[in-house]
Image (cartoon, rainbow, N blue to C red; front, side):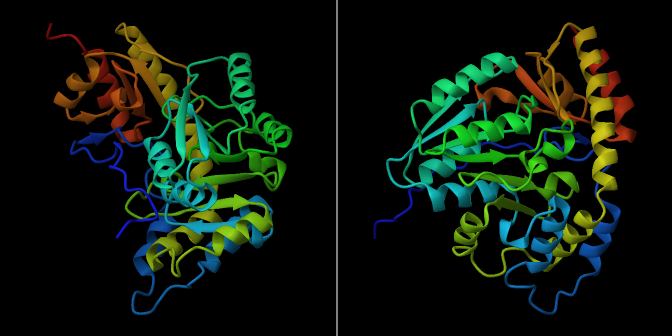
Length: 344
């Protein structure tokens, strides 16, 4: 039997390393949200969760001051990206992505049968990025995927600028990956301006904000009509009971995310200074992670019990991505960076 979707091999991801300190996955450096963790542990497992994840919908709508009709619950941001591409792209549609980018972008688009192209414009200043986006959108792609802040780069652009692009290019569907927007400067999220334009959806990750990657939690935000279409193809029970309980608790209390964002910026700045001091080349970041050109550092850090993300799969040979460490990990990480090359 011929499948209607196109099977594709798995993409490479971080967060699977076995190490004393794992900086390959970029999570809230404060660790798991205490209330969310308690809620997940105490939830009722002897009965089904809500089939439509209504509690998450209500909590996310309240967070963004939107109507619940705009929210689509998903088990994580990667699942949200998959849903958007599979539901909204057709065979031989053109899908462009601003790169380097998350490996699931290509995989999801190709599963839908679309023609995918990654436009490698990073690192770039705001003016250069804007010019590249205009050139790309002049081609009238069916879909444009853009991460804000970028992944792996960590560079953010104002949400108002993204919103303007959506409104100027209504023939293109924008999928805006805001998995790390909660860790970026104010004004980064499109949602700060209200519901997205009619030709845009925003994908959010609670897994990263609440530092609970073992539970898959996220949601999509779109206009009511588009959100209804996406909700209409969701299977029942998109989130497990523990995931929904944790998500609602975390959405109700944003202080943990806000404090984690502030700590993340502090730790990223310290990592950048430490890397620069040993001759590595860290790149500016607006997120809770950074990329550095440091060809031998990944293997040396792993030898010291610290896992980082090798960026070769992003097409960035010789680069590594490091997440902001937890407070009790910071000294060990900075010490290990200071010792890079000491065995030469």
